[in-house]
Amino acid sequence: MNAAEQATNPATATKIAAIVNLFKQQFPSVKANLQPWTNDPDTQEWVDPHSIDIGFNLPPGHTLIQLRLHDHRLIGIEASCFGPFGSQRWRFSTIGEWKFLGTTPPPPGFQEKLKQICHEMFVLFNHSQP
Image: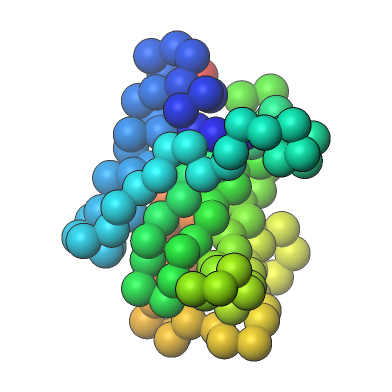
């Protein structure tokens, strides 16, 4: 679900802002999109109401970050990067082996930065008060 729609209370809004700041620390020129999903019925059918979704214009392409939540706890993070014509370049999930898969994986330095951000997001959601 769009991050902008999930920011329904100060605690969640603060966490979403902190996520954007984590990305800005590693990628200073990044721009965040708190509404990556359109509001049409076809798209809304596939939106997970238990996720916080944020789009970023990271160096390898447009990247969708989806935080999977259960009872206000972060249980997994999925990232997908798309090229200029909508083709998926790579994907990454913290569920399982934390591996990058796809036809054009990002360079190792980028991979390490994204993994570090994911670790910090787990700390932000699971080691603080709800």
